[in-house]
Length: 111
Image (tube, rainbow, N blue to C red; front, side):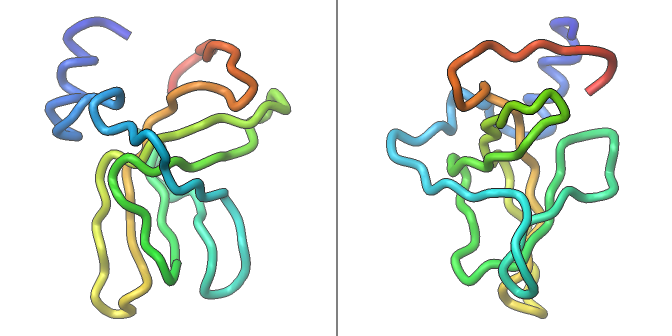
């Protein structure tokens, strides 16, 4: 991704991913059951999730998701949009940080 696009993404999200990482983040996982889940949103232009949780994630918390490669990727929550009806629903922008095994991210195609 070019420098211009990176800057544009940071302008959209407000902060760079490394600026919001917490030392001891709460870790969430994709999936779950009724009333206690996080799912990928249909917005394919960016990494966006929606969910219903008793404890809504905060900026800097982590989301772990299984990838098609078989690895689990760590995402950081960059922006949270709360819904007030129902009060446990939210939308969030996330950004990939690394794989949970410590290996580097490798991009294939578009993100």
